[in-house]
Image 1 (tube, rainbow, N blue to C red):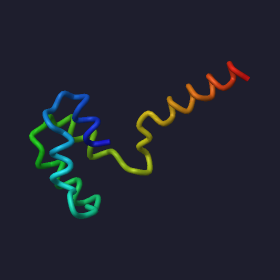
Image 2 (cartoon, rainbow, N blue to C red):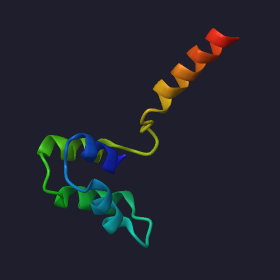
Image 3 (cartoon, rainbow, N blue to C red):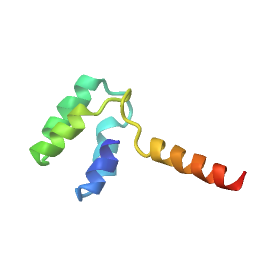
Length: 76
């Protein structure tokens, strides 16, 4: 979710930045927040990333499920 958001916002090399941060261990939420606060990005982007939680982030899952249901209903 973090790298996708950074990519959409036009930041350079979000995958590499996230990979370097998390390579070799499973960071805690506190460590992730510390990492986000060190990024040289706009404050509004930091706030967005700090508010992301695994429990609430769905990405495109909801819209993809809706499209799949619509497609299924059309072909049945």
